Image (cartoon, rainbow, N blue to C red; front, side, top):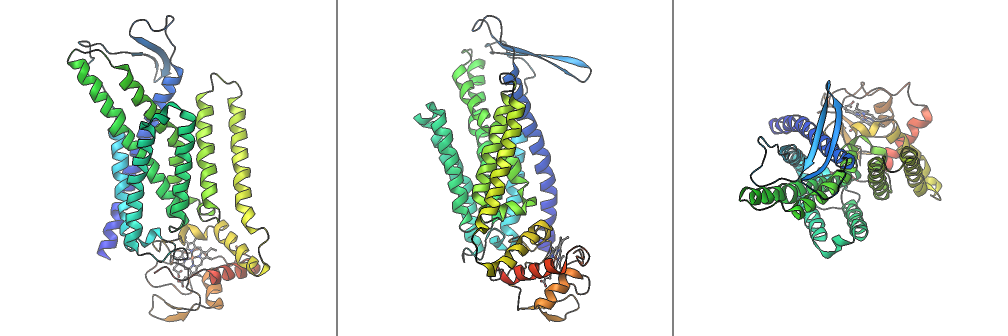
Length: 409
Ligand code: HEC
C-alpha cells in the first residue's frame, strides 16, 4: 500500500509539472512558428543581416521584433535560449510512463485477450518503441530522402501508423494511443536536444571564435522545428486520449488514430497558410467535418454484418463507452475501479469480507445500486444508474460484461 501511495503521489506531482512544461513548450513552438510565417521580409532580399521584422501589439505596447543573422563580435547579451520547457516536458513524461510501468508490473499496457506476455515484456516493448521510433525517424531525415519532403513525410507517417498497428497486437487501446503519443513526444524532444540546440551550440561557437554565421546549420535546425510544430496537435490529442475511450477502445482504433493524426496536421498546415490562402477557415471546417465523418464510419463499420447473438453485448459495449463507465473502469487499469474483464461467474470479495458470486443479478445490482455492496479495496465512488438507464440498457450492459474475455491479472 505504501508503495502504491508513493507511486500515485509521484504521478500527481509529475503530471502537473508535465502539463505545465508542455504548455510552455508548445506555446513557444506555436508562437515562434507563427512569427516565422508572419515575418515581413526586408524590401531588398538577401542584403544585410536583416531577415525580417514583425510588430505585435500586446501588454500595452508594440513589440518591434527583428530577425537577423548574427555577426562575430556583435553577439547580444543577454541572449535567451529555449530548451528547458522541452526537456522538462520529456523528463516528467518519462517519470509518468515509469509510474505506469510499475502499475501492476507493466500489465497496465497489456490486453489479455490479445497476448499472454508478462508485464515486464510490455515495459521492454514500450521502452524499445520510444528508442526505435526516434532512431528510425532521425535516420530517415538524415538520409538523401530528406530532399524529397513529400516522400519522406509519407514514409514517416506510414511507419508511425505501422507502429500503432504493431503495438495494437499486444497493448490495450488506451496504451496504444499513449505509446504513440510518447514516441512522437520523444522525437520532438530529441529534435530539440540533438539538432536544434546542438546546431545552435555549433554556430554560436563558430561566431565566438570569429567565423561567420553558418546559415545551413540554422536551416537544418529550422526544419526539425517545423516537424515539431506539426507534431504538436496530434501529440496533445494522444496525450489527452485517456479521456476518449470510445476512440481508443474501438475495434478499428488504429485507423481512427491515423485519421486524427493526419487531420490535425492538416489543420495546422491550413492555420499556417492563412495569409496566403483566403479560404483557410472554411478549409479547416471542411477538414474537421471530413475527419469526423471518417471516424464515424470507422466506428460503425465493424458492426455491420455481425451475427445477432453478439448484438446485445455490442449495444451494451456502446452504452458502456457512451455512459462513461469506461472512464473509471479503464482497460488495463484497476486504479479507479475494479477491472470487469472476466469477473462474470467468479467470486468477488466485498469490503465487509463477504464473498459474492458475480452473476447477472449481482451485476445488475452493481449498476443500479452500487452502494449496496462495495468491492474490497475501493471507495463507494460509483454513481447509481437506477434512474439513468432503462432496464433494457442495464441488460445490455450485463450482456457486455458477461462477454468480456478472461481476467487480466
Ligand atoms: C465514477 C467512477 C465509476 C463509474 C463512472 C462507473 N463505475 Fe462501476 N465501479 C466503480 C467503483 C469505485 C467500483 C467498486 C466499488 C463498488 O463496488 O461500488 C465499481 C464497481 C462496479 C461493478 C462491480 C465490480 C466487481 O468487481 O464486483 C460493476 C459490475 C460496475 N462497477 C459496472 C459499472 C458500469 C456498467 C458502469 C456504467 C454504467 C459503471 N460501473 C460506472 C466506479 C465507477
